Amino acid sequence: MAAEGSVLQEDDMVDHRRLGRELELFHADPLSGAGLPIWLPAGAAARHSVEEYVRELERRAGYQHVYSPPLGKRELFELSGHLGYFADDMFPVLRLSADDEFVLRPALCPHHALVYRARGRSYRELPLRIAELGGMYRSERSGVLGGLSRVRAISLNDAHNFCAVGQVGAEVAEILDLIQVAHAALGVRPAGFRLSLRGPGEKYLGDDEMWQHAENLLRDALSGLPYVEAAGEAAFYGPKIDIQILDGAGRESTISTIQLDFDKPARFDLSYTDSSGGRSRPVMVHRSLVGSMERLFAYLIEVHSGAFPAWYAPVQVQVLPVGPEQLDAAEAFRRDCVRAGLRAELVGDGSLGARVRGAAQRRVPYAAVLGAREVSSGQVALRLRDGRAVEPMAAPDALRMIAGIVAAHSVELLP
Image (tube, rainbow, N blue to C red; front, side, top):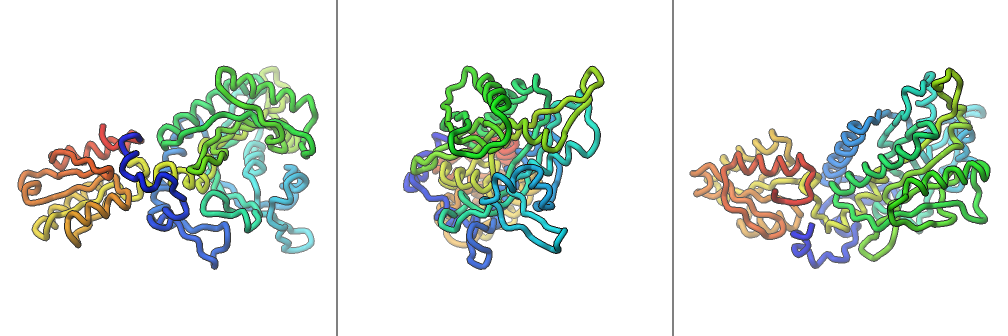
């Protein structure tokens, strides 16, 4: 992204909340409630592109996607341990009757355990990778809420990989590779790896032997990578690998995570038929490639100053006719862009200079200018949001170039 570093220097310390308002990405309304942002069309378009990319990346890696409800019976979260160990971070129980109580889920793993045990499983199916981009809810205090970085309704890119103990190392290594692929496409700049372990004074599930085994498995998976150990940062059910990022103010947070869990398979009595015909218990590996959509976009807005890579920019091409005489040709090019799968719009009012500047201010990657000379020769002149101008080229060639960059999920604006 070095080529675009100079275009938006005034936003070096940008706050994603301000830029989110200016670019109309998301909106906070008191009637919606604190920590419950509304994604506006531009933000929703960018998020949808990221969600599609992540789902396809997971599908190619052998993940099977599911849908599960955002709430469940009280008994489900008693069985999972969440109500016993995590109740302070959960919304109050919804009581419909004395024997019919529901909870807004604080995590997706209990439902995914139910997916696993929907039928009998064989060792031949392992590792079984169940993924979902689903909603979960945390009763965060109003004083800590802010923009997209701390919310109460969370859309998590989540998955649970059920595997044999002997498969854990390879599974974690493959997840780490997948995380790096996703981060490169999104323009995420990781700040380091952290091995989050148990600490004194906290409540944890499971016994010492289970924890020691899980911690050693993760240490082995991180062999050769620089990481720090963080006591007291583990999940209540197991240790984890956290991939850290830094925001514009230098504050550290977690964007991606891999967690080992021996506890949930035991609580839900999960098993599979092993190669000898007996019953064995799987390990559950919790993992998220990019974390929640909310925290991810809080980071992406800031790290890119709103100038997202073209493949998930809300508007990818803005078509600018020089005058009314080029309006028909400009509309035809806009339609060609849309047919090619691009998000394109036509802007014809105002001076050309003002429209070019407006496109750059909105962080539109490509402004396609059509004057009399371009129309007569079947060309377009591309202006990039970082100020670069591209020599006029045949309209079909320009379209192929932009579509190719988008299809490749490149962070660059030119090949």
